[in-house]
Image (spheres, rainbow, N blue to C red):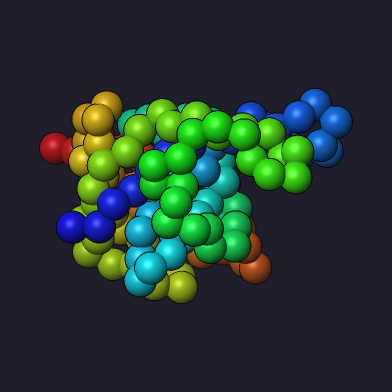
Length: 121
């Protein structure tokens, strides 16, 4: 199984960005990353913004981010299994420290995706 982490990225007030959550999935030596405005939970359907891939170090890192870009705090981490993970869609089952969660990601346009979170049955 591959690893995942969900980080709360708190940005400085003057950054021009909103604080958000980063969903990061280990894939081929990097972290595929999406930003969402709310903490993932069953029943949430939200727009997710695909960000550039991140370093694997974020699987274990918490703290300040260089360049005065704020700080990250881990809200969940664990392993995931994917039945599909490509450039247009991802179907994942996360098994983290806070329980299990099923995620469907669908590419919409450019870097915008729809993310739907459900309880694992």
